[in-house]
Structures are given as structure tokens and as C-alpha cells.
Image 1 (cartoon, rainbow, N blue to C red):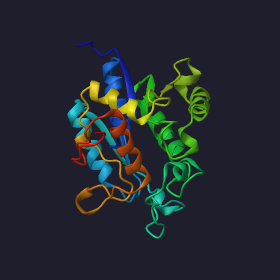
Image 2: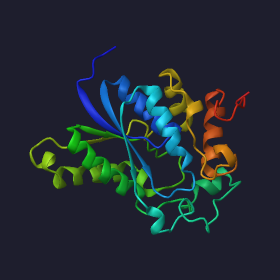
Image 3: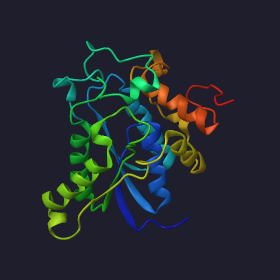
Image 4: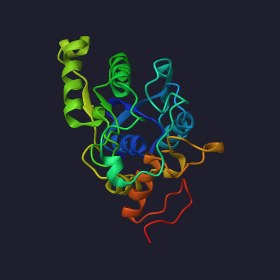
Length: 235
């Protein structure tokens, strides 16, 4: 096993993408600090999943912050009065920005990750955003990540002194099936992860929201079993 000589902060949501990104970073030789958020999300079970994922990957430095985005509203993920869309087709998911978009969420999260990275002396922020199999969120695109990296060079002491924090998104151009295959090859325990936007009692996935749909389609395309759901798919 290679000895980590570099440090990165990984945004760890508890979902399969962020778990895969974390495993990729460890395999690439990074020592990791994980950052997770409780932000008033209806699927707060993901924070418990993030803790489980961090433990399974051997990440000891795990910061969990409370940021009350529910105070602003504007999204089905933080406003219980707004229903999470269910049963949408691939075409519907690919069209427009859904009500599950949380205003400026990734900008808020990346800003906090940038502060943590500078405090820890980390050279990179790793996140599992994806611009292919996703729900149209504008803050998952490569051009957004490049713009934030430019901001990091200008807005921090580290950047001004020539030690700018890089934004590393190893999954951004991968399909969901490719992400799952990568994580499988790295030994990620997807049974610890959760993707559902509107989980049932006990954290069980609803199986009908956009995120559940994309996850199921990814496992089917990869020809693998989703251990979170306990269903054999892709046969």
C-alpha cells in the first residue's frame, strides 16, 4: 500500500458517488479528512451513512457540520411542504432543474470544505459530483468546478502564497454504471450508502425518486446487485 504524502478534504454525503470518490482518493495516495453536512435535509439518514462509510474506509478525521439551509427553503429536500418528485422517466429527469435542487448548496459546501482544507493544510478538495447521470443541477458541471477553483486561488492565504487548493472531481465525466464498477473494484461497501431523497421508515429507499431511479439504473447497467436494496438487478 502506498504511503499517503498528500492530504485532501473529501465531501462525504453518505451516497454512493461520494463514497466512490473517497475510495478513489485513498487509492490515489491521499490522506483524507471527511466533511459531511446536516443542513435540514429530509434525508438526514445520509449523515449516519457518511459516518459508516468513513469508518469502513478508515477515515479517522471526520467533521460533521450543521448548516441550516432549511431556514431558506426553496427545495423539496429541505422544505417538507414541497413534494419530492416520484416516478419520473429518464426524459423527465434529463429536462430542466428539478425542485430537489437546493439553492447554491455545492457553493456553500465547497466554501466550507475550502476553509477546512486550508486549516488542515490539504492540497485538494475531492467530491463525487457527476455531470452525466444526474438531475440537471448547475453546480455539478465541470465549468462550475473550474470557476470555484479559480475563486480558491484568489480568496485564500494558501492561494495567494502559491499553494492553491485544487478541486478534484474524479467521477464528473463517468456514467453511474462506470462509477459503480469503479467503486466495486476499489472495495466500496455500497450497502452502507444511501441515495434516496425521501426515505421510508428506518431509512429504507423509496425506490421512486429521481435518485433511487438513477441508482437502480446504474446497478442494472453495471450488472451488479445493489446491496442497499437487496435486489438482484441487471439480469
